[in-house]
Length: 293
Image (cartoon, rainbow, N blue to C red; front, side):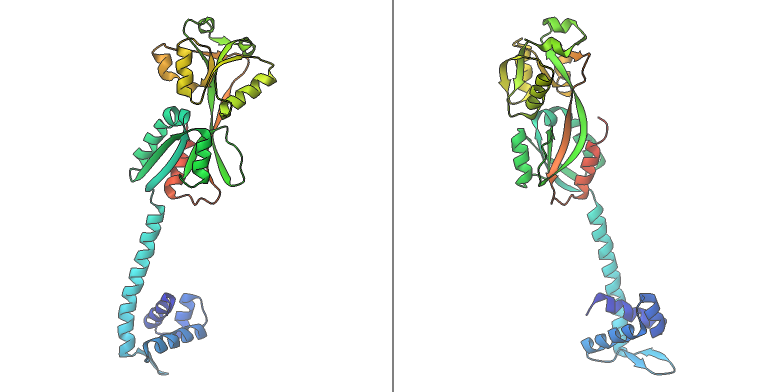
């Protein structure tokens, strides 16, 4: 027995016409007759008195009609509740992010999202870039947040924004007295860099090669916080995302210098597997990440 058959039966009972019941359900009169016959076989007895002059339900038919209305109402209510649940922004989103994004760029978006959707939860892991990709492809998390996203056959890349990159130096460094410098001024400078496998390092090395700039790497680190600490003790200069240095600029432990002949940006993206079914919460979180800071 199918739920559709009960609906046809109820429509027949209410219209008292096989023809009208067929029209309501957009089927043939023969199909209505077949479904009623199938119900009678299922319940082992006649449901409709098939007289020529007047339509009438049998006692069994009256009982089935009463309960069928309740069943259909429950079924319709269940469908509405399931639809409401599927559209509700709730549940936990597991996120793996590189340190610089997670510690500096992400917090205001987390606050904005949780304020708009208090029934949702966010679980954030701070990782190195290679680990973020491993977390996503291994299904340990729902979304990854990376810079300079790497194309892969099994990954979907969702571009978010381009973050400005700036030069930082010790407040007593000669560059600190200038508002802007030319990129060529970096030639020969002592440089604090990221380790070679970090995507930002690869992008900067490519830029230096294109511009024929030679810097001397005196220290290499795997995260932006350690890079900043090395620059604070005047070990060298560095290029990092502007969003990561606001606190140090505020307390004057570091100086920021911009480039007059080149605007530097790093692309930020969210990644997830191509087979990932995005929940309403994940879709809304991605929408929030795409908004202005």
